[in-house]
Image (cartoon, rainbow, N blue to C red; front, side, top):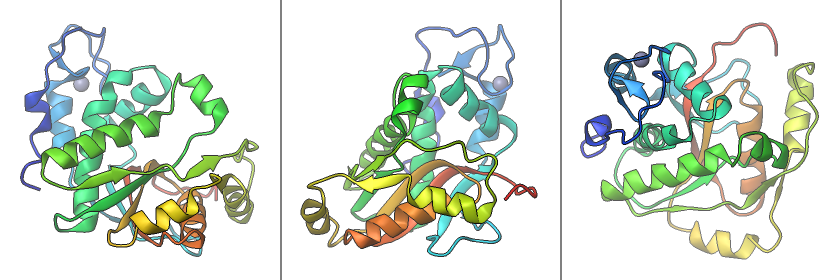
Length: 238
Ligand SMILES: [Zn+2]
């Protein structure tokens, strides 16, 4: 999308982190923590539709920047698990590409990031998706999109879902979020004329996105689509 591409060329590091967040190479020039060849790989990615199989009921249309591997996976891991918070900006800008790709033409949109649990916020020193969403909105506004970010949902403490099958995961996902008290009327007014795009970093089974879409629809906010950075390739784990 014109106006959003070429984002790294505008970014320069003031501090030099030890190694590239995408390939772990050290002692190379970095821009926002990423080396030139990883920047090139990330900028070459183009958003496209993804659909987990089987897709959970109610899963909205879903657009991802790329597969969860290579540099995209490494940069996401660096951002989420290795404390490289400065990556929020380039990753947020990449997510802006995905939003633009999922909406198609420039128009007002309402972005709803999937909320993090309190324990994830503690472990990662902040809500990593909320931070991303802020940069996504900034980037879209720079490209002339009237964008707002809403956080109508709250994540509830949840059990580890690694051992659950797909049905169990879907059920756990539905009970993992709730609407924040008092948000309903404000939202249905603000969502009247613009598509609602749910933001997440990674889609795996789609259970989280389906659950979030279900809750939002119940609150008068039908979801247009979900925009994510990466889609995992399914293995037989549910
Ligand atoms: Zn690199």
